Length: 201
Image (cartoon, one colour):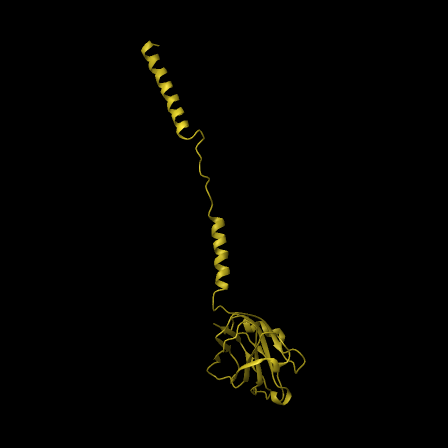
């Protein structure tokens, strides 16, 4: 190899070593740190959970559940197997009272259903309540069997136009739809039905 080319090659090697040394000094003597890629999947899952939890506790939200029959003057039940129909958002299903051969006031003070509520409902809608049913809506902060201990907030008669009523402010607790008189059926008996029981803010 000619001497001139050898000198040039050596010069290039020395220059390369010098550049590496300068880079090492400028970086503080440590290897460059490469950021580790992060996944956003965990953050999105957390956000979804947070949104779901928050939306369930928004001011004004009302939750209703634990439907049960209320029959303290009877045998302790009233077509309990149909209770799910009250809260299933399906107006084609319904809860009904038993069939009575005499007007209800001659037999007992009433029969009804209770639900546990969270929040402060502003209205109650009794979807599909049989026309001419006489009823009351009562509230209590605990579930008690003595109807006299409940707070009577509404007395009304179901109309053919539907039954939606305003409620006074009551937070949480239990609501009782208390039927005190049932309309006559076509077969001469007395019975009432409710398709949906909705408490809304």
